[in-house]
Length: 396
Ligand code: PLP
Image (cartoon, rainbow, N blue to C red):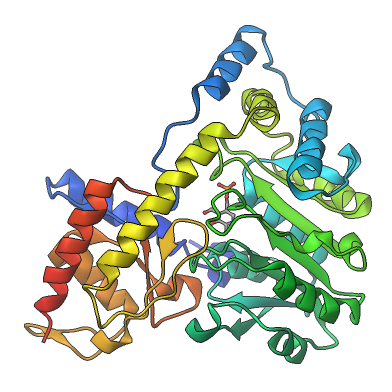
């Protein structure tokens, strides 16, 4: 069968592949501790579920405007004003079927063949895949554990060329949990100020899952604000991954371009989810903050458990719900005839022998690491780390 060449430009997300392998082993009756999860293990807050039920009863069942209901886009503007002190108008907001679609709309709206996109490594799996799908060229910049996996202004500037069109990053970051401070963002903004043709995609989907206090957005700097596209959504902060709702805030011109792309791919996002999203955004954030408190307690636990794995080194995540340890000290070790050559091997070894699912760092462009999620109960985290420890002790 002759499939299109687009398909060969990117691969299936490793995160989804790992979840699938874990499910297959579970179906065989094997008890797997899942530390590969990329979503909160909490239920959607009750008041949001009630809003969705009401929307069904009130027959919000028709196609919506492509960009999303006007009152939802207004609620998003209010959220930006309340949480981020950023002023947007509804014509600058496009609501999509998840932040993933928001990012795809944006990249397809901006990137042509030959355009370069700077992506600090480690990055969220989908950034590079979508750039490649759009025929752009990702330019990866390696960040280091020593610098808490954040790109510096010097690194950024030296990666910029005449062809640079876009910079894509997340703060808090998946997979490293790194959170950029206002000062760090200001230094990056000072570089962008010198290059007016570069756009900046700021993925803030983990905004609320932040253990250092106030979330800072690079959109706060007036000199570059016109060129910043803030990506956000309800998946992580409101435990609504399956509901599928993301959005962007951008210049009205770019928002219109994303509206055009989305109009041919999917049209407006799910109507019931949109009605429920209005309630989520307009309500008190107490349920979100309770969830964040639990993540913070688990982070503490995970950092304590990491001490039992002295050959792994990791930064303390300031946000999101992952740890991303370096594991190259295990490379070359053996289990029987099996040699651990890279992060893929270690991740598969932990799945098959320790029955813990993790995600290989290769998926995030950092082949010396694996990602462990703490979006799981304290009990499962403890059990997962116990199994990892005894699994690793068997390697010689
Ligand atoms: N951005 C980052 C950094 C993510 O980790 C994810 C989901 O894992 C997304 C975007 C996509 O979120 P959504 O579920 O809204 O598509």
